[in-house]
Amino acid sequence: MNHVWNRSLATQLIAFTLAALIISQALTFLISWKEHSKALDAAAKSEFLSRARTMTRLVETIPAEYQKQALLASETRDSRFWVTDREAEDPATWRLTAAAEFSRPLENFVDLVRIFQDGSAKTQIPDAKRVAASNAGEGWRVPMQSLWALPQPIKYVYFDGSRGYGLVIKVDDRTWLNAAFYMRQTGGWWTSTSLASLSLTALILALLGVFFASRISRPLRHLATSAEALGRGENLPPLSEEGPEEVRRTAEAFNKMQGRLHRFLEDRTKMLAAIGHDLRTPLTTLRLRTEFVQDQEIQRKMLSTIDELQGMTEAAISFARGESTEEETRDIDLEALVGSICDDQSDLGKPVNFVEGAKLTYRCRPDGLRRAVRNLVENAVRYGGEARVFIRHTAATIDIVVEDRGPGIPDLMKEKVFTPFFRLEASRNRDTGGIGLGLSIARAAARQHGGDISFLTGDGGMQAVLSLPRDGRVETPAVPKGRDWKSLRGSIGLRAPNLAEKPAKPRTQH
Image 1 (cartoon, rainbow, N blue to C red):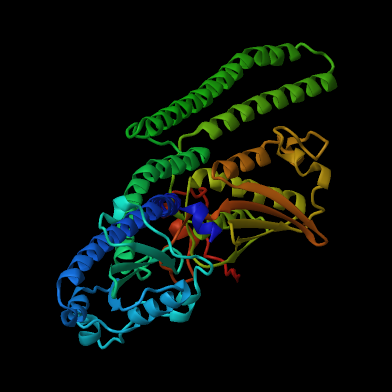
Image 2 (image 1 turned 30 degrees about the vertical axis):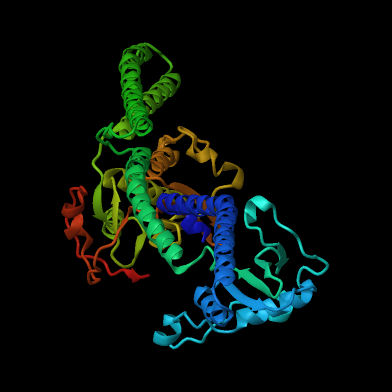
């Protein structure tokens, strides 16, 4: 659940919108429902009081034999009228009588729900004993004359809290008119109509939320994709600077940052090229001056040092130019790329074995990745005697693993070996230790793809692991195994050495 919540902006926007809708509806209900109930109660009791005055005048004017029929015809669901020949004295007894009156069905009321929907008749007061026992201790009261406005004496009493209201009116010395009002508990706020209205409103708000969240998140997704691609060193067109001000300013800032980074790399490359060009003159001068040295041994050492300085300068310039090379990112067969590198090393007579796996299409810059893998393979052969290469899949990465049988790298040196011009081999002999840029170039290429290089040392040797993010994987249909790596070089943009082609060597299945 947390994964869905944190992943989707639309989910959060819709959830907040619906929560705001429900809270606002609840607050509106709490604020207005009580006042609404009071207004309805006051209106109903006012109408009942007016009807009681009318019934008083009617009972006073019509003959006694017609009074009962007239009162029955005037009753409603919420009101009952009956005549007694004596005044009610005990309020509790009167409440019990009123509850009994509400229990009888109305003669002038047709219950269509019970007739057409086969429902059972519902009494106005479900629990007569509870209603009769309510408001214990409360006696009769006399209303204000302004409310009654008739000469006949009147008294009233409450029952069931304040929902029930009873009147006893003395019409004459032998007739007392009894009137009872009781409003049945109405349905709650959550009726089918209100729920349907709330659901429809929520649906409309959810659809609007999805629409606006999509409009908001679309430029953010483009920004995230462009930032990831820029981190891998890809050349991207500027983002579209449109939309709301915040989004437009973010896209503008990203475009400016991208331009500054490209200018920085270009300026650094130009600076290193200028340094290399300027160093050639003093190095050439030094080489000429060594010719005048009489001691042959000193002359040889001086020339060796000059050659080393010149080689390091050229390698540094090549390293910087390689990092800034603008290579197109495209889909390639990663198995074919790594397999062709191993074939090239085998053609040179080096003990390199590639363990074949399933076809894997990956989006990368193949020349930079090829250079990194080749450096790792060459290091494994140089220091470990042989190399075994395979591709391993993990939950988060795709690993190109290069195994050897060498002594490995000490733990304290596993990070230092990536420093430019750093060599574990202390002889400074380029034939045995190289210049010290191979691993630096390999890590730079790996990090440009969003990955990295790590070393794992075991009892039987060491593993150099070039980890690539799974985001670059492209799902494509599998192809049959038994491929010839050399025939695929042209399709993946690899340059084969100028050697006579050999038949493809059998490979181990991984």
